[in-house]
Image: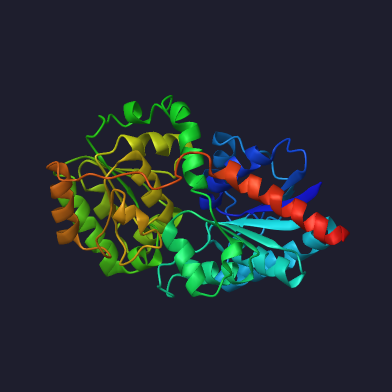
Length: 374
């Protein structure tokens, strides 16, 4: 058996690892061992996703918790190194671009253990984003690079990655979405919040560039006031964003906005149900750009760039820059007036990316075994 340590750490990882663990289950030649670094560790950010997505209980949990980027990354490396030494895996598989992805890929590479990166090659070309640094370093030390769109392969080739290491497989995030669409229909979130399909806006905001400055948060609230005159707004609020509202003394101002509902972070199925029926989504999340593209839901991304350009060229996504109430409303008015435009689902976003990845891992393992035996 080829032993693969599969690493997750934060909420965006969970949707990506779920179909991979399922595809590895019962494989005759590949054995997946799930390692949870504990980068996201509270109920809303971790356990509920494991339950919703039926991810098996982690074989190992490192319980690293929160901290600065440097402290958290260092702690993950310190705790992951003895795991790799004890487990002696044939491969470490990492997903996405969080600190756990960087820390575990570098640790494995230094121990001369091959690394596979799922969602490789995505680039925003904005190094002020911590995730961009994580992506660049992880790809630099990876032996197998699995991509979700053509631009990712082009980026890797420009960076000198050999073509034989790059594999276009599709999007495991979409695997999870496709698999859980029917289950999401059982969610009662629309009824609980008294919403009608295509009759509300859904918001997620958490990036420091949007929420760490009082001026930006006030601009966000100005946009909410104007948008709420058109449609109700649902805002599952990230703990970071809630803390910033308190820091800036804006909690009362938020509560005074009519038709704005703040909720705690939602489980995957409840959020998927809200997302699929929204009139539009406002976000600064990477994964939501992909999910709304598949669902055909208009998405306004409150960032100056995206590492997922296919969601703009093929999908429903529009980049509108950082928080700007006037521009948000101009785009929202266009969408609500029926001006979303035609879109198409990107190639290989078909629900079978994990299966393709496991088939490639199997061929890689068999070829490696032959080389070793010679």
